[in-house]
Amino acid sequence: MNSQMRDPVTSAFAGPAVVGRLAPSPTGALHLGNARSFLLAWLSVRSRGGRLVLRVEDLDHPKVKPGAADAAIQDLRWLGLDWDEGPDCGGPSAPYVQSERRAYYRAALDGLLSEGLAYPCVCSRRDVADAQSAPHGRDPHTLAYSGTCRGRFRDWAAAAAVLPPPRIPVWRFKTNPGLSVFDDAVLGRRSLDLAAEVGDFAFARDPDGAGYMLACVVDDAAMGVTEVLRGDDLVDATHCQIALQAALGLPRPAYAHVPLVVAEDGRRLAKRHGDTRLSTLREAGISSRRVVGLLAWWSGLAPFGAECSPEDLLDGFSLKRVPRAPAVLDGRAKSLLREAFP
Ligand code: GLU
Image (cartoon, rainbow, N blue to C red; front, side, top):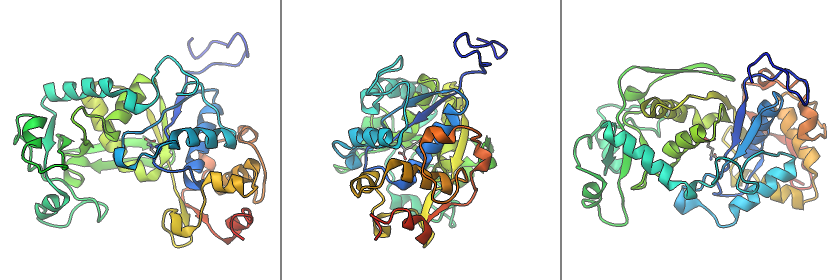
């Protein structure tokens, strides 16, 4: 259907199909911070009549918790979000659980290896730090990798052989000098010299390439995703993902990164700031309409104290209304959750 045709059922003009995704990691329960990003991802797509995919990102082995994927699905449904494809409802790109998609990541890894664009690395964090001539990286915790293991090992097995178990190598991508640039729907133009600031980035700690960075790129393409909306802690990861897309000949979706929810100390929400898990709020007797109202107030979409469903927010939704500053779990916000923050 081209952009000038009317949909025969709704008689609305149908633009190019927007496809978004909700990609929870079952490493813990959904809390207010994740919930806000998921609500905005849903609104952005549904307000334009688009389709949504739910994908479970369960490759982070040590941190994945049994039952957390089902709990995330339950929490998202409780909030009032829905999707057209996912592990609970199937769809043309099944399976929707990353641990069941390893063959796709292996194929992508083989593609990178055949082009000489990936190599296994055995450096520890300490090795990476020691190889720095000067403090580097945009974030003091992020160290640019100097490429010590480039060309060092024939293959993964050769690299693994020099490490004492249980340590295993990591796959790195060979970056090229030059600016990586993309236009973010919330943050505007973003640019980063990936080679200088990050270096050859790690994309999977797994022999078959089954790690977040590569899997995300492979799955976004395989599932036809045209828009990625997520927390702004992943802005730098986007530059890495764009580099992988270019190397693999995959299309680049549009990106939107929204500020995280932070506590009054300015730090991202953590246990010490109180229990903001959706399951806890629900068990305390707080309605999903009140929670969605809080998320909407934080996002410039509803007045303070509103109670609403995600659908109530569709009319007039625009990412332009979302403040660029982080949402803060302050006294006012907590007063809306008084049963959980007495
Ligand atoms: N699975 C990630 C999370 O739950 C999101 C990654 C992404 O959206 O690309 O934080």
